[in-house]
Length: 163
Image 1 (cartoon, rainbow, N blue to C red):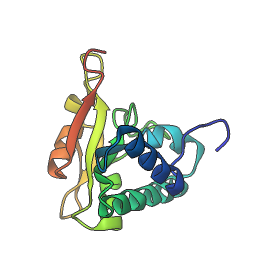
Image 2 (cartoon, one colour; image 1 turned 90 degrees about the vertical axis):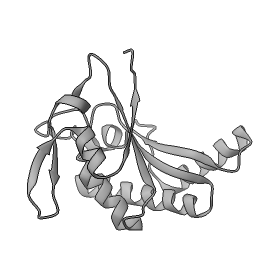
Image 3 (tube, rainbow, N blue to C red; image 1 turned 90 degrees about the horizontal axis):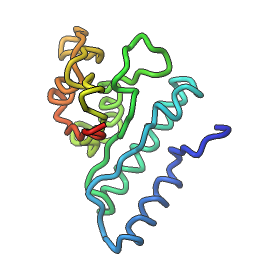
Image 4 (cartoon, helix red, strand yellow; image 1 turned 45 degrees about the vertical axis):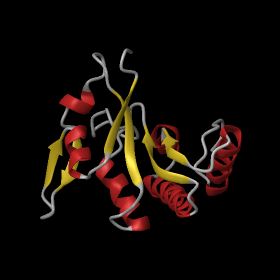
């Protein structure tokens, strides 16, 4: 990707974790976030390329969990989980991301956290039904992000609470 420092490559992710462990003098990190994956990669790639890269990133994270270098991982986003689905190359569906984690490691995957800004000017995670989520019968419904995360047993971590 030209003109971008964003990287999802397994070698980069592994090296980043190893260097963090060394700098912090730790054996294990509690959480590693894949920061703004769709914001940084989605607009410049096809969805097939993006999800292939994200799958490889999840595979790397799962390997790091099995090596006890991290306990869990997640995605930290700024806008992709807060914008309308009609905003092409901006919207990310959290159920699709979680299903990718299941594809990599089954239902007991370690993708446990989602970080998104929540504050008085950015309330979308709690009020806007912009996430399409299929139920067990395959019926799709629009839901708010926190409802989706609850259904998928993922933890919400907020950023920018005071703007």
